[in-house]
Image 1 (cartoon, rainbow, N blue to C red):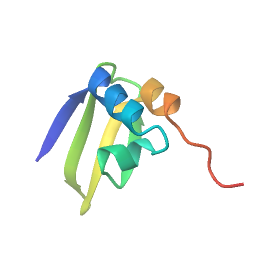
Image 2: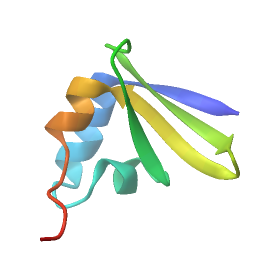
Image 3: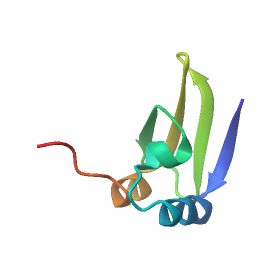
Length: 69
């Protein structure tokens, strides 16, 4: 089972935890980008045994955290 979150909902969640990654805020293993999604983020509970999210590409990029150097 999964759920849908609107982009404004996710942005409020991210604003409440500015130090956290989107994956941490959504409590998922990984966030994947979609070029076709625009208004919603899908959280899927069991994809290969892991909980993942699919977000609009622009939203994922907006909250991308720099990796280790």
